[in-house]
Figure 1 (tube, helix red, strand yellow):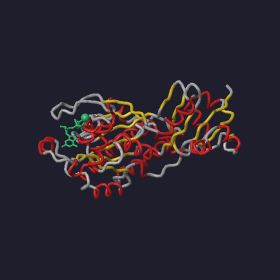
Figure 2 (spheres, protein in one colour; figure 1 turned 30 degrees about the vertical axis):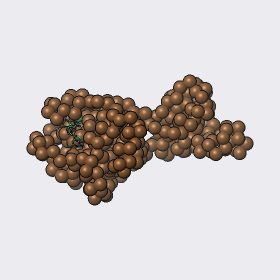
Figure 3 (cartoon, rainbow, N blue to C red; figure 1 turned 60 degrees about the vertical axis):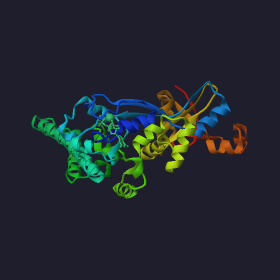
Figure 4 (cartoon, rainbow, N blue to C red; figure 1 turned 180 degrees about the vertical axis):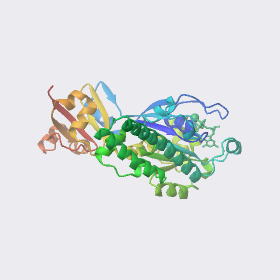
Length: 358
Ligand SMILES: Nc1nc2c(ncn2[C@@H]2O[C@H](COP(=O)(O)OP(=O)(O)OP(=O)(O)O)[C@@H](O)[C@H]2O)c(=O)[nH]1
Ligand SMILES: [Mg+2]
């Protein structure tokens, strides 16, 4: 999954990116805006994969991955060219992490006045809404120009109607993720990759002294429907440079229970509604991610398109049952080694063997 770290200038995005990924990208406060995002891939810590690897002793063990893309600060989205390369790239994210500045820094506030965090959030939301509106309106103009030239297919009319509803929603200041769309409507607008349709986590980046002072803001942001978390960014960046034992001591001091990497991983999974399933064998033990509610064919397709195309059935058992009964053999005796068809809804922690024929 690809997560875009975005936000206004100098809110600590790169600091948090470094803490998350163990990178050391520049956080120079005077550096001009970069053109390229910082990119790093993080393995999703998952004890289940470690356990499976101990049992099956494979040649390779592959954890699920999250790709973090840390984008340069954006002051005003709507003053940018919607077709520019950075925006096209941002829009390929599966979800966003929006970083807001809650640490005080007079110099930064003077250079980039952002106001309090609720203001920052509403400004950024407004900007995203404007950008989506520009894209939707531009497309509608083009469709209507086509009408005048005699190009008026039912498909275009349907698209235009959906876009009209999209524009209405945006004009009332509401993001598209709050809009009820049926499958057909969703399909028609998917290609636009609208900003406000993407799920988003809001991180409140503060100094370590304020770490426990910002819960009311967090609740307020949550009440707007976002997943939100308070992060002491610079403190976390320093932690990420320590060895595990030292880091743990500092974390205990602060009352932080999980590393920022673990916390954000959980948030990203809930954000996107993802679950993990596993494949096991002598060659490889591997974790895969899919959207909750996906069926066995979709899961097979994650592994390889041939597996989805020639899908016959899935042999399946669950990690928790394996832990309880110790071995595949015992699972078979208990009837917990199941044969499932195409419509089987894959559960978190399922171990799948796909039988297929192409
Ligand atoms: N006091 C304090 N300073 C921070 C914190 N996080 C970042 N900074 C400082 O803020 C400045 C900008 O940090 P970056 O992480 O580069 O911010 P950014 O959002 O990536 O900036 P742009 O990419 O230029 O928009 C640096 O001088 C950081 O040291 C924090 O949690 N506390
Ligand atoms: Mg940065």
